[in-house]
Length: 392
Image (cartoon, rainbow, N blue to C red; front, side, top):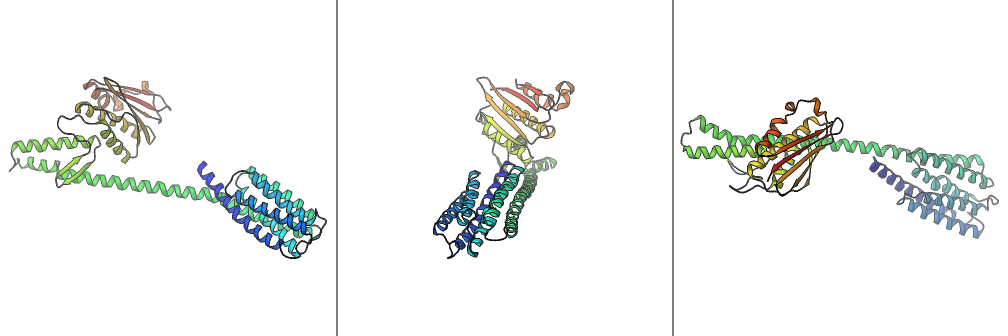
């Protein structure tokens, strides 16, 4: 909302500048006509005052300082005083027209800036009262007060209406843009999920289903060793997919995984964490990583660690009521830790059977099998924190 308010004020300022400068230029042209003001000194002072009004209106378009509004109003009233000799001098038609354009159009542009809030409305009313009082007093000898007041009121109401229309329209436009953006993100996410589903179907057809077909036909034409190797590669592929890796087809029936490592090589944690992040991002959960991103772990420890971490994030996605989770990775000489936190609804651990959390087997037991540990912290309304620890 703060950004919308700033954009609204910026549009109001620029509109007031264009509106005011237009009337000021026309008023100056009328004021400079022969016979508009008889006294030379009054004419010079009036033109200088109009220049000050123009400068202030230009600055209003780029500055939020209310002092420039006061300068424009003060300079405009000063032009009125100089031209009429504080109400003592009757002006010709050119002079009256110039002052009427100044008072009802140029100075009324400040009502555009002073639109949108109760305090600004109070400022507009105060400015109108001051300008109207000065105009009725100093132009009394030049034209009927009813004409002066009517034109003044009409000009200020028009400017205030423009400001109110802009102030009301900007938030509505911002809401419509926001709704379009949300619809676009939802459509993009649905498209990505559909593309992932189709890619997974092709992957399974090219690998696992092909192997199962060979088994169904007793492996005719394939040696037992080749069949065992193919089944082993398919099992590794499924394990990597479960960890969130994205397969990249290299050729028909051949895939390369971003998190795959050579035999005997310890996988880098940072690459596999990114795959987990992408996996949950596709499902609508934004995961923010903090801390260490390049930790080496043995394959069995890494598998257990990532699967437990993925289960924690799945619980956040399903039960927390929020769409963002934070994962902080730390390490020391003997242990790698992951702290999963969310700002969701939370729960009272004492009131819920731990076995029903999808936590006892998928997280605690899995980590204990490789010498690790898991701790759970939560309370109603305060979110949930899970700390995972595995040995290096």
